[in-house]
Image (tube, rainbow, N blue to C red; front, side, top):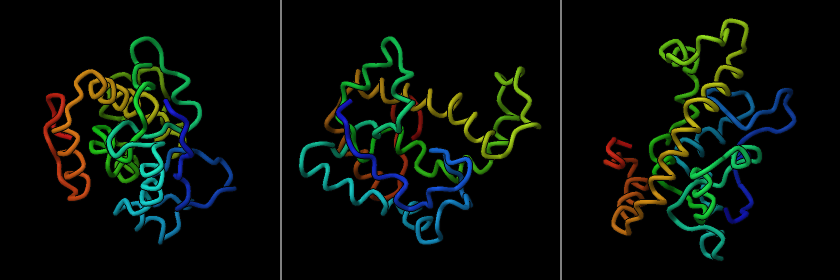
Length: 176
């Protein structure tokens, strides 16, 4: 993946104990103004500069935070060949990811692959990180690999429109 300065975090407060790249709705690291900017995706506007100078595209996988792309193996590494984008299939599906992760404790109770994990001993933030790492991130990789293997200019235009309008679309056999 082409290295791009990730502008995420600009709506939050660094330096808090237990800093994590995974945030949930109501996270005290996110300022009230930052929460509004993130909800309406206005915090993505600085990324337009990276599009204009050719470091990013409008559509493609989001630039990963350090530590995640390093874990990709095999064919999943194909997503690293793509230019990072402001929007993409995984971005559309998880548009309100922080609000989704606010219910991580309920989500893990409905997940079948957690028999060896004791969520009762974990904080809400730790449960959110576990759910992100074990459910959401692998799904994002799957969607981005599908994008890599089934590129379509028409789908790119549709993703841009759906992002701007806050709409859903059919992609990879599901609604995103």
